[in-house]
Structure formats: C-alpha cells, structure tokens
Image 1 (cartoon, rainbow, N blue to C red):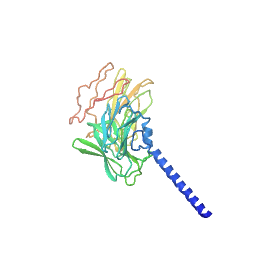
Image 2 (tube, rainbow, N blue to C red):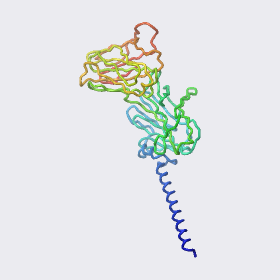
Image 3 (cartoon, rainbow, N blue to C red):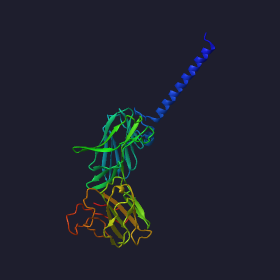
Image 4 (cartoon, rainbow, N blue to C red):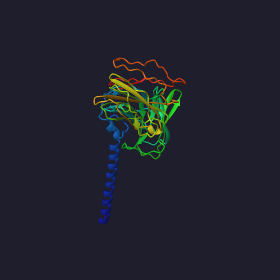
Length: 381
C-alpha cells in the first residue's frame, strides 16, 4: 500500500498533467479559431479573410460587378478586372488548388501551400496567397494580363499606361500580413516587373525564414474612380488628389470647365514644392468656359492635393468640372504649340477640331484633345 506522501505526489502529478492537457487544448482552440476553414475548403483561411469574404454563397457566380463599369472575373490563380480605363489580369504561379468556394465578397480555395483568396470591393480586387509552411528564398510571380504598360514607382506602387498616358489603375505596394491581417514589416519588400517576350510578370523576391506562420502575400489592384476627375457646385475651392504613381518629369495636365461665361481662371496650387502651374488661354461662350493648366512633375508631386478655384463670375449654382491627366516620356512640358478648340454651347456631339500648330520648331510630340460639357465630367482623346 502506498504511503500518504506517495499518494499526494501521484495526485499532484495528475493535476499538473491535466493542466498541461487543458493548456494544449486552449492553444489548439486559438489556432483553430484564427485559421478558420470555410465550408468545403480543405486548407485553413485566416480569420481576417473569412470576415472580408462575408457569408458563403455556394451558387454565386465567380464574375462580379460590384459597381457600374467595374467587372471582376475570378479564375484559377487570381482574377481579371475590366473598367473603362482598361483591363488588368493577375494570375499567380501557385500549384493547382481545390475548387473555388464563393462568398458574398469574393472566393477562396485550398492550395498545396495553404489557401488562395480573392476579395472584391467597389474599387479594389485583392489576391491573397496564404502560406502555411516555409518556402525559403523564393521569387513569387503573378502574370499580368493586360495591353497596358506597367511602371514601377519608388514608393512601391505599380502604375499602368496606355501609350504615354497614365490610366486610373494601379497596384498597391506589396504587403506581408500575419494571421491577424496585421502588416509584417519586411526589409526590401518591393515589386519587380519581369518581361519575357510579350508576357509581363509582377514579381516579389521573398525569404520567409523569419516570417510568422502562416503569412499572407497581398497583391491588390485598384481602380481610381474619382480622385482625378470631379464635379463640384458653388464658388468655394476644392481639391483633387494626384495618383500615387507619378514620377519626376511626368507632365501633369489639368482641364477645368465651368457653366459660366468667363475667361478669368486661377491657376491650381499644390503642396508638392516643385514647379508652378502654367495656363493656356481660357475660352468662353454663352454659358460655358474652359481652361487648361500644366506642369512638369517632381517626385514630391505623387499623392498630393491640388487646389482648384472656380473662375471669376461663378455663383452658387455654377457647376465646375475638373480632370487631371498624367503623361510620361515627353521631352517638353510646354503646351505652347497646342491649339485650344472653339466652344459651342449648343453642341450635341463632340469632335476634335483640325489641329493647327502655332509658333516655330519641331512637330508636336503629343496631341491632346480635351472636351468639356456643362455638368458632365470631361474626357479627352
């Protein structure tokens, strides 16, 4: 028969062992909660992504239209979105995964490395690659399916050009997220652009030896729908924001029109600390006027507010419309050899007048035709 002392020691060991079991169970519960798998998804998806995806919608289409003119098609390895500004597809080179499971705000599927998630909002589509085991030093790749030309910016953004002009589409800087969706500071994290023949790839060189597991790589593509084109009513000043993807020596052009017959416009101002804005001669007609301003950008002109002022004669009901355009690769930032077209208050269709260069010198590098219509955001060709 065991002594009381032995019995006490044995019981204490059982209690300690029981506590260890409870502790392990608690750890397992936390891990299961933070990597909550969706129904039908073999691999775990981080809880912050399950929240972003919303409720399961098994019968939902993988083609989404979260707002007018913005269409996102989720496909194997990523997505493709179409907007009036152009189309951009993003397809990762991850191993074949399971079937997509649809949700209110996107879709998710398992992969051999963890899981793959696409979320869709009215202006942004994001492709998340969640990794549950170490990959070491690896270059991750996403194929860019677009006729637009991508351009890297030192601030980490990727802009897209049609010819010489920046379109309102961009990819955000690369991010690494932990299981809670928090940013993991990672030294040297920067997109690359790899071109092989006609194919272009968005690349990310990453050593995950010191990253917490699981981690998620977040490439996002956004459509700017209002920051560089806006309409306001009244006499007060207002601002528009320049794109994140402006580089030094880009040429910025602002077209401003108003439902008032005035040829007295005030040049824009901004906090970039670089070159001031120059102006062409304003034109006006019975109930409409227009002016064009331009400047050569400096690096600090990226993502800054540009302040606009209504023309002289504006009243509380005057409608002002402004658009900002960005051009690259122009040797000259002077629009002195451009002709401002005439105005017609009764026009129902728009077309560029015949272009007649003025002054002397070489032929123009780039021809811009800016349209304005009362109360309608202007466009150009």
